[in-house]
Amino acid sequence: MALTREFKDTVMELCKDPEYRKGLLLEALESYLEGDIAVGNSMFRDYLNGTQAFKEVSEDMQMKESGLRRMLSPAGNGTCKNIFRLFKLCQEREGIHSPGELFSLSH
Image (cartoon, rainbow, N blue to C red; front, top):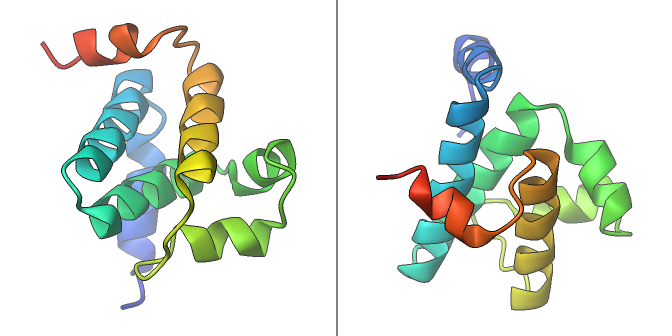
């Protein structure tokens, strides 16, 4: 399903808020841990699209941007190694130094 321009603009606007971005990362991680890979992938896509970070993060992961996009597609199935590398890079982008800091945001 293609995203509407309005939805993309809304996500981009919401991603200006650091707490919203951290919330997306937390939701992504929780979704993966609950076994809902498609939702976890969706949250990461929203984060990377909203922060316009696909290119930078794919370079940091030493993979092609198209590969990262495929990994996070609805049918994507990234390796555990790549998912956690992605999470760590996004965490660092947000200035989160430990997973505990991220989980403390939800309480």
